Amino acid sequence: MDTRLHTLTMTVNSRQVSVEIQPDELLVDVLRDRLGLTGTKIGCNEGECGACTVIMNGQAVLSCLIPALRAEGCHITTIEGLSDGDVLHPLQQAFVEHGAVQCGYCIPGFILSAKALLDRNPHPTREEIKESIAGNLCRCTGYVKIIEAIESVAGQES
Amino acid sequence: MWQAYEMPTSVEEAVNTLARYRGQAQLIAGGTDLIIELQEGKHAVQCLVDVTRIPNLDRIERQEGWIVIGANVTFRQIKDSTLLQEEARVLPEAAATVGALQIQTVATLAGNLASALPAADGSVALLALDAEARIADTHGQAWQPVGELFLGPGKSALDPTRQMITHIRFPVPEGKHGSAWQRIGRRRALVLPILNCAVCVGLDPDGERFQWARLGLGPVAPVPFRAKECEAFLVGKPATADAMRQAGEIAAGEAHPRTSLLRASKEYRLEVLPVLVRHGLERAVAQAQMRTA
Image 1 (cartoon, rainbow over the protein chains, first blue to last red):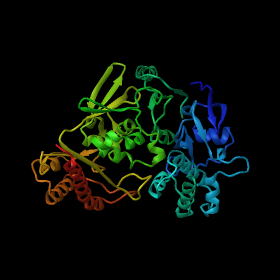
Image 2: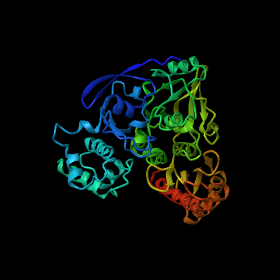
Image 3: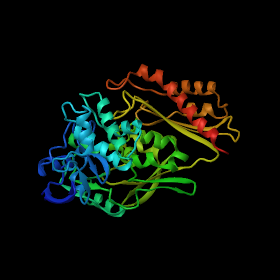
Image 4: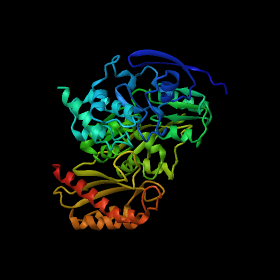
């Protein structure tokens, strides 16, 4: 059966993009390989680690499980969309300052989960923070510094 | 993995699209199980029929004596529903334990039901709620008790190349009713359960005796399981700690968990099961007693 290329149009990091894809490409691969946005990482490739987390229409989702064509007309934020030129987003700054980054591989996913939380709930409790990142695994840090980094940003936005 | 991706905008269009592909197309909603199965080569499909853009399937509503949940309702919506927290707390509590937030945001209750897995959290809760699913195909639509959809582990009576669930509903109990979800796993997120337990109870108007009880358990059988002996035992019994402890023992007697290399041994599950059931009963009874009859 002939596979036609489909045109996928979506807004990524506030810019509209149109890209020709195979119908069975997944969002993570379109972001990384077609759009060159390799900040989104592939960890397990089966929705169990959170490294591929992006924000889709305001909510954190696992891009390795999303058929790219489902993102038609949607707003996607990847880690590349957070900094403003050389100026880091407060979450990125906080992660650096709190020692929340070791190997760095899980971090884009964590930051986007945290951003999705703070965008809808600017003053979360520690429990709410932990719940929002429960879908992100880190093998290096033990999570304490990550939580402290997010808490510090949650405290600032008042 | 697939050569075509369709996004119908009505149930009719969806079932007609499926019919057109004669078994070579399959439904997808959240896809959090299906995408993995397709990557592993467990199925081959030519076309995925994505139902998430069909309008009006994303509501949770009270309709006369029923709560009706659309097929595109996600676990996250269920978790956040104040209506469900009030009338069927077991379901949002179960939804909160599925995977993690990123999965709950896209995964649907209907998809969980269609998976027919013995520990599927949504399915175990719906079984205890005496839920029904509305199944649509090119011949029409009909309600079916969810228990009839489970034929074996991973084997659903639904044919996803031909049929779709449009809605799920369950009756809202009256009087002093309560429910609770208990689950235990090797960690608290991103994990399949060692055991899960959905308890729904109704007490007499004084809140002192059980009038009825429904208990869903997983994975203790090839399919989501109703502990009918335990349920029968509770009818008429006083809502005391002793009765609930006995009920837990009876549930453990009729359940047949297996040893899972990844999760837990049969022996461990049988130790924990009565405790889980007792905790669920205690919480459900407490909620029921707080209601004014």
